[in-house]
Image (cartoon, rainbow, N blue to C red; front, side, top):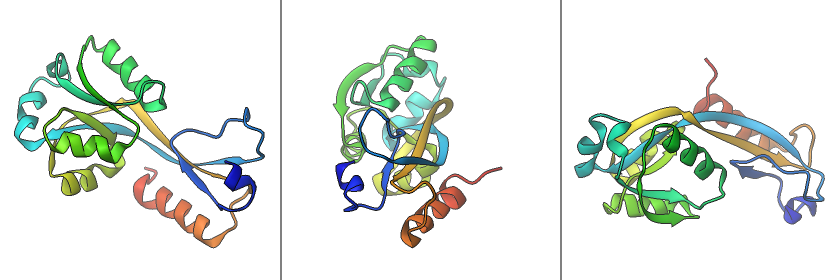
Length: 166
């Protein structure tokens, strides 16, 4: 955020809104939201797909770090479904988490908006979907109204292609 305040960055893309607790004047520009898709190695997907989501009880899971927005939402959803996953790894880096999932280490989640890209890039199968866990995305800038042409283009592409409105 310091780089944003010092104008070394024009925008920060985030899955959490900027908090006013940090002393930087910045504005949140919502890009969109979506549910999440659960994935795992294709060879394992059919096993966990049958009876979803109850089939996830005891399944090996790769999860975002505790305390992250997505992890809190996943923990609440799993608890509400009475699902007790077997935690096999916690990750700060979602790409690394997906790589471990590809290598059959466990199930993982990603935003449903990028389901096709995750399936193609990591060669993994879909286990199931939920809209009870919502991922939100923001462009954070020091501008109240987005003006920089590249930032406007990113924002419009996200709203039009990743998160189209019905």
